[in-house]
Amino acid sequence: MSLHPRIRRRIYNTLVTAPLVILSFCMISCDVNANTGYGGIKTVNDQKVCPIMTKREVNEQSVTVDYKGVKVRLCCAICIQKWDEDPEAYLDLKFIPQLNDLELPKRETKQVFCPVYRDNKISPKAKSCPTVTYKGKTVYLYNKAALRKWNRDPDKYADATILPQLNDK
Image (cartoon, rainbow, N blue to C red):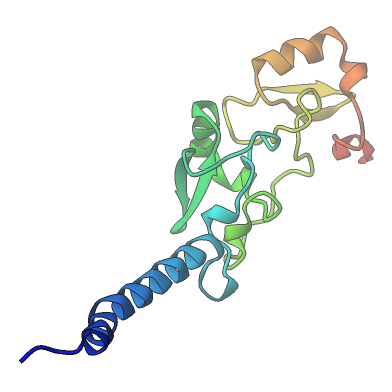
């Protein structure tokens, strides 16, 4: 006994097409959750820039490191080295929004950025961040190149908005 073509089409749609539509919906739904997190929780995909060299963009090809179970993207090998030396110095929700559920430690210094390379963060603990004394205050620099520039003309870079320790009595 042969089935009528309309009935055959209905059976085909029920057995083949409907599951494909459901599967497609699930895949789209999963992709949305990968970008925004379940229930609006921020994920690594919400991070747009490196937390150390804050003007450099990061994306899915960027290297990732882990901070208390949360993935953090970095832009380059230099930043990996700096992160490994002192990750707490670079924790900032402005640059790493996926850390919003963690209690972040307080920074050890008031100074956050290098006075020479003003978009690059410094660490008081990192051996790769040289220091100088300026008017009796410790100033942290991003790297040796920043140190060379600073030494040529410290007054050019001694800006109290970047170096809040200069305002301390």
